[in-house]
Length: 439
Image (cartoon, rainbow, N blue to C red):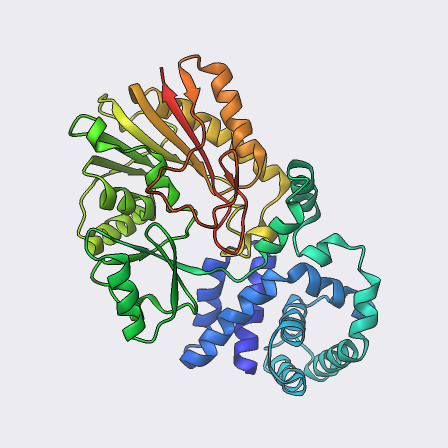
């Protein structure tokens, strides 16, 4: 266990120093090339868990320390161990002993005897004083909800009836939701396929199937064959909300998926509709991932490298539909990206709104008259969502926001939304959708 603790502590320390967890965890794992698959898996769980509940864990640690630690590595190791003692099923005695062992393995300049004694004393004091310590920070909202105070304040102001539930949902373990390509297999047949392999799942609507227990993608039936994809229930709404009623529209519909990487929505649209798809992203490496996903799904699109805030890549031909899945704070998907809570700053909200305000009018000029643009974020902050749309409507008389209506063939069970803002729940993440029509 101590190797898993060391790996997790290294990753957590990197994140608290400002590095993204998707980069920090592989870097931490690389330090221990001989770690077993079980140790690597445990390290990932500990990293995510510690950051998920960092606000609570840090509140305990602050009370246990007489003064802040000067060695961030020991601090991170204590955070991981306290997470285990609070939320893991591991034996408390084992957790403490392994943490003491882990700190003894740290390289210089750590004075090992001093560090071992400190870690042992802190963790044993935690076990003895846990109830008394927790009572002291009941009024501490950062400790209670494990989100930054500015984030809590913003949600409380913008969602007076939902903010607590949204914060709690942000700390849940995310479900693993599949999108079944019903052009290749029916929902009933796929559910039977899962059952034959003893994989428990629930069909929650439309093409969405939730696994009771997450599985490695390579072990999920049909993944390599392009029968299914992994995609959040809320994200699956995008392809439906684009209003692609082919019976009422001319053939050869031109559709732009802007900021398309990693391509989940691109693939879903192509599974549902025969369109001329242009998929745009400003990162060539991310576009390669889009191509890989399309290859697996046996689908084709015209992939273009370009900035959605610029028209330098555009050939001048108008699009009938545009999916504007713009960059955002990702505040609606924190249960999947637990580091976001601690890496984001309130000023970042403004930075993203500035970027979005450049993208939206730029894409609007590429939309044909009568066409529709679906504005999407994975944020729950109003400034990036309806607030952004309202400003755009004020400056563009030829734009009309259509009512948020889920089509009859769209997944609807369990969707919780307020005028296009999906309220994060255990069933789906916090996406925002606004459908705009060009007059």
